[in-house]
Length: 259
Image 1 (tube, rainbow, N blue to C red):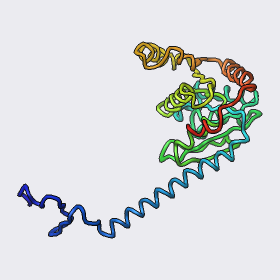
Image 2: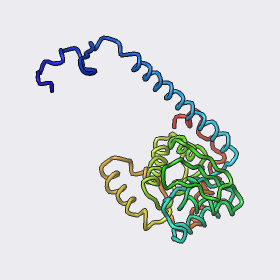
Image 3: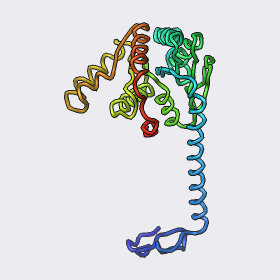
Image 4: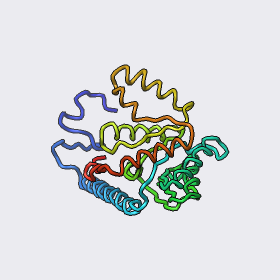
């Protein structure tokens, strides 16, 4: 056991029994090799991410117009929210909008199922996860991602609207990211529709009483959100915005790349 306060000598560190090395000396070759190996792995990881962007963009650019629909992966098939999401997706699909979901179970499956039986494509953007995520059987177009941020970009890139059903952390993450991108004008102002006043009402009150009152957001930022209950209201809001925006210039591609 080493008890002396001055051991090892200043400017040196202990690397093993009976061996010390000055900090200015080079690391052993084995450590240099490990560092280069890690650097190479990181470079290949970047190339993998780039390939995800390229491949997904190429596959999804033909599905427009589209609506991204989010919600809980844990919602049971006999639950009212599941049936509501399926109805909304079917109506959107019949109105001419492809429906994009996360491709998994719960609300995602309901969204894909409704669109699958409609006129327009059902799109599933799946993610590799150790649990919870398993691709559903109702996808005309299915694409699997390894990285969350590449997948989230595609939800934004191809959406004419966001429809947000009740959900957990993942749903809240998608919602807040959509609000941030629209608020900061990193993407076009598109409808962000929360389905279920009873579920989302408490959040809206908190946003107004806390964020607006304490100056964290502007009062008009709440206008970015619509809260509805009926499927026909969702379709009407999406369709009205799409018709109004057809004659406007879309966000420049360069701006979309800053997402």
